[in-house]
Length: 303
Image (cartoon, rainbow, N blue to C red; front, side, top):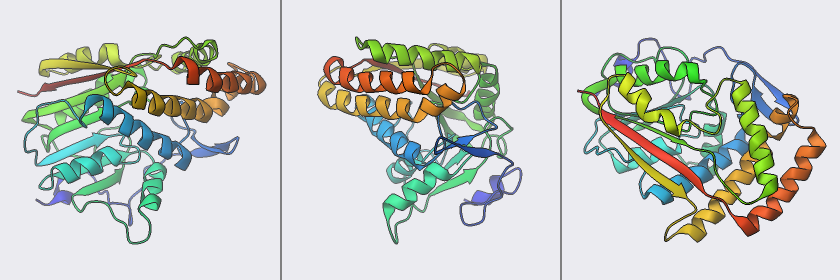
């Protein structure tokens, strides 16, 4: 299988990739993309959180996916972040070529650092730098499985049909597409509810699906022509492993809200001192109250 024969335009992996135009800036010590509505930083600390979140979702769903895939030859992960999902899929399906792309490779570099000297990704996994807002750099019907997880923090509602249609375009007939996203989490912590309301205001102001895109995933798939659409809903923080899930989920949420602080403050939604006060209270309260966080895996087949 010749990987580079798939590309519509020349893209290379991390050794000498062609970078798409993008801008970033430092905000309160955090690296922020300035040409994106993304509500989180794009830096190595955020990369740590994304990997923690990956393990949490895998624990809750007992798998990296819910679509009934068997022996895929080619897998695409859209807006792949650190690439951890794609790397694990490459290990699970060693005969498949797995590609993950993202607009920025900084979180991925954090993963490389963790591997240490001499560490490397699976030979059948490749990362590319590309922009999901633009046409994907692949020919039609190149993949057996296309996947996107938690893209609602950067993808405006108006752009979802484009991204899903591109995921379908590059999907082979008989292949599966899967979207994973969340609903707003619930908790008895007053401070956590206050900060969640602030983040929902931020998302709403940027045209994003405030609180998560889970309620819309199945419709997006059907609108793109996908058949046999199914949903699997998991509420994190419940079930036989709820104690471990709660521990990971509280760590994930606290990290996310710490990372979002300069962005929420810059948007004028809360003052820095008020946010810090609420964050400290949230840290104390969540240890007592916990939280519940619904996630939906929506998938279907291209016929």
